[in-house]
Length: 199
Image (tube, rainbow, N blue to C red):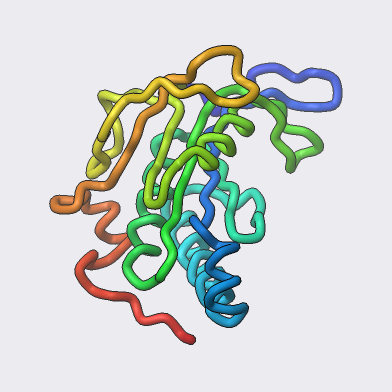
């Protein structure tokens, strides 16, 4: 997918981008059962891991969404690396699990900092459909035979997604538990060591 501008419609710029949405599974119930203090610990851990991993992958935080985050990158492979790295790092020392949706395609860049288009909506809705620890990526825009090293394709699914005209082919992704790539290993560290969190 080309990362350069494709066209320049009136009032915006059409570009190729990859998007990811990540959020904490069961956060509302967790707040109810464990209280605000423990919830804030989980939120701070998520934001810390995102801020640490995303820049190493060349991925930008587009916006924080309460108990989630929207990421953007010109390169689909980089966003997969970031999501897998954030997920692996977060699960080492926290009580909640992440879920993620990823999609890529042409969108309108409006006023320099807002993205509008089907890829944004699709990534968000795939995140909503994902289960705890699951990473779902729309197949269109990604080469399933050339995923980043250390990322496994667990399954290919056909999914009905609200707002889409027909079923969407979706890749169910995961980092290899053993033999994770050197790039991911440097991001997430030793996956067998727990991360100490400041409470």
